[in-house]
Image 1 (tube, rainbow over the protein chains, first blue to last red):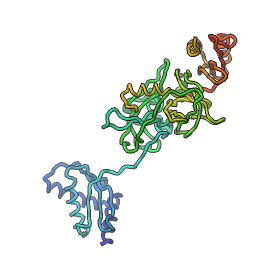
Image 2: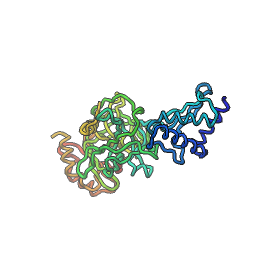
Image 3: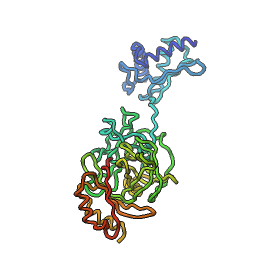
Image 4: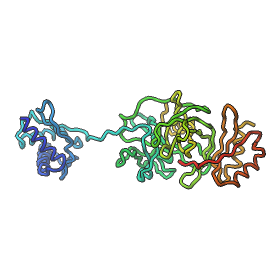
Length: 320
Length: 73
């Protein structure tokens, strides 16, 4: 029996990988039988010259059972499974007890996102550029996906983005991880924030639970961040109400009331390009103190936490 | 006048000068002053600031002009 099961497994693997096109005709016969038996003229199940509906093949239960997973994207999936099972057993001369046809969700690559990951609006990631995933926040209602926070210039390409634009993570460059939902515009006047939010698509299980306290930093306070370029680095707050002109691709914008941070180690930068969006945390109690957005190799600038939190709340997000 | 107010008023005077890229209050155990960061090769700007702040004082508070690299995102 084992040999027959293994032969059958090979047969379905060839269908799965697209080498066995004859097998597709046989599956279509089962579909025809199923539709006839159910007087069904409509089915969302399609098997026109491709093997997309066979999702998995495996031998289970001490090598005694062949299990075939098919998509559940059509009406009456379980009834179709029975038709298919009958046809498989007849064609491959297997005992019905040794075959299971089950419906299944499509397998997706598991991707967990974490703070410090390389992310960005597609205008950035298309050219290999990126910023940092700063932190996660909760949606306004529990039925929605979680959200991520970074800078406007990371998630909205400095005001160029349109709400709903796809956001990418460099570790999964072919599919967006979410879409732009809000950003604070950077103006020609005085700015406080370089902030944007994107909603994730299908990452519910990978979001860490818990909350971080936030408070005002102190002059001389030791801090750290986890950036996409330089990783975890340590620094010290040098000024709490710094005003700076920032070069945003040829356009100067003035940012007021910013935190200025100096590196904790001589000849080492606290941040470099790509670290934008990192969360600045207190070394002593992990409190959220600011959102990194600019630097010049010697000093790093961050938006004040209370302004970030205030804006996120105004947009309706839950901040613990 | 507090140092914050002094910094704010100085900012209004010099933020638009070519080459000025940062103004901040720097505090340490020893001293407290207003730091003005300017880009390299802007001697005219530096002179204007020093003219505006005789004896390197602004509203009674010490100022320091430093050379800095530009900030980028």
